[in-house]
Length: 284
Ligand code: SAH
Image (cartoon, rainbow, N blue to C red):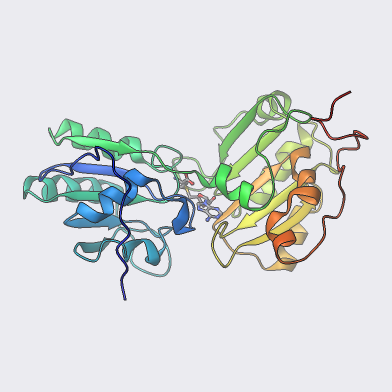
């Protein structure tokens, strides 16, 4: 049975007929939706959603028509241009349209392209950010995307460029030199090339790496490995996308911050994995 969740009292925006709200659904766990997303789900006539949006989230819009526009899962793929034009058509038909995308719509999600097409066709839009898998997914694995003792910058990378099958347009030397922590989206297919490029650019083979698949869902799996062993370890583990791959010493923090493991009764492996000898925040 579908449960209605009421929103707290607030001046919530109205999703008007003819509008498209481009909304992030977060990385998976429905609890990671924003309140704006929930407000949108309750008002939409149509929800156009991607493969990575959990079915449970769609259940929160029982009044709406649900249209699948994903690109995986064995279902036929929708062409990006067709999705954008379908949004235009639905808006012109006077529907209240909710375009729901995994994570954040503007992080490797083609949200910019869809929104631009809508604006070019004079369709009014609202953008609702979401929690991106590269931040929230790592947090569910107990990995802080920044940590004062580890990194002052973080680089988000796509493992697929526009052609969908190469990483050739990236300057791996600059990435390797410039950022202590790398967060790689869509990296599974080309992980052999990516790890080889990072190693030849000078990152040590022993550098910690985590692979988090289906992060924040009940299927979440986490592999801790190193840059030198990642290819073999992924093959042995038979892990499947979607995956976030994190390269850098912040991965070690999982030894003390695997909060899901701790909740299940597994004690932390190491209270000081960076070897500082005292917690970073302790008085000197
Ligand atoms: N807009 C999304 C990213 C879309 S690109 C966001 O902000 O999160 C799709 C890629 O995102 C996947 O190939 C994978 O690398 C990553 N991803 C999305 N959801 C994920 C999840 N639950 N677990 C692991 N990776 C995920």
